[in-house]
Length: 482
Picture 1: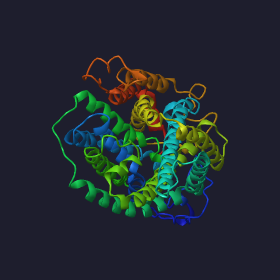
Picture 2 (picture 1 turned 180 degrees about the horizontal axis):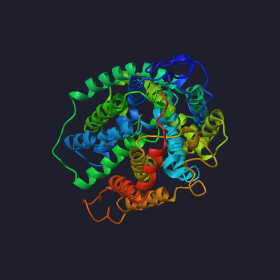
Picture 3 (picture 1 turned 135 degrees about the vertical axis):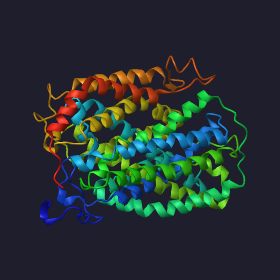
Picture 4 (picture 1 turned 60 degrees about the vertical axis):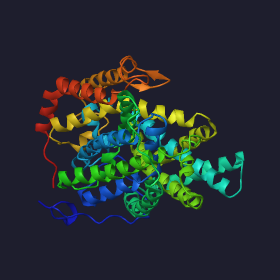
């Protein structure tokens, strides 16, 4: 059967120009506008994740958690296998034609879905604030290189306002601009990585294993949170522009490799860099310059700023469409504006706070509590219904296949909170919170298996509570028109 506007099966619509403003938010993407291909997703994820944030995560392994380079490398390799979850969480968009938290309504119901939507919106805004603060810190370091030291308060304010204004441009333009620009940025970022590797390769020292297995599990939780698991709630926001007939295997492979390859390489480089940083070096994007020659500092900081804008683009776009699921009726462009204003205020606080990096570490660990159970429920629901969705019902605010009781699927919410409770038992976000299991096992630092408990308990609870009705929904839902 031919699709709309004369497209034959397997054909892909032409993408909009890079300067076109996307007005569509959570709304269904017609087949005639499905211009994406799996390879586009590879370059988008690679372009975003070739990013100095992941270099910092690698340094954390050695400087904060005390891992040797071999220990850090082992954890990095294991933790980044979770990009397979990002790949699997990209399969629903092409079938449903809507965003991640539009699809999530199938599992939770339109009203029940407001709970994980709120969690996700807070998470995305948190990542945006992290990126803006790091951009401003890099700008302050550039000012220092230019002889402006100390950086005056007025200049810090200008840097914050300038950063949030520039950050809004790509998400405002929308999906096409995001994919195309991030693909272009991937190449210079690879070149920067090669240069940094040359500086570090001959100076790092591996050292003997020096940290407990408990410390390794805490770093593993951070890697998973900042990596594969931490991107699952964004995945379908970008894959929804692929045709429903797009190869599932190619989507999973493109997303998994696009995320995992740069994450592994950058975090491994960061761990190697951490072994030879001066002990007094500041743990930050700018503090890493202590490991590089003086002439490289300015180019490094300029690239760091560009990279941070790139990764923030994904967070701001996704937070906008998540806000639409939370507050129906808001226009996507209005959502971008709301998030930008909030980011400006909170990022200004972060820039002037002395506890920014402690707050960042806590944030990355605490989001696991909701994200692990939600991801498991989302993927189990997709598997039970055989990835069949009714787009019109997903976007209904009253009635439809997924309305159930008052727009809430209580079985999903019960599974979500059971998973969150289990994750909290083994969460180690020292010092603000250490779960009872985390404090008893793993040595002086304790341990952290929160991500695994959240995934297992949340997914298993949903399967036990909802498998029969969800399977019935899937069987009653027609396959999408190709």
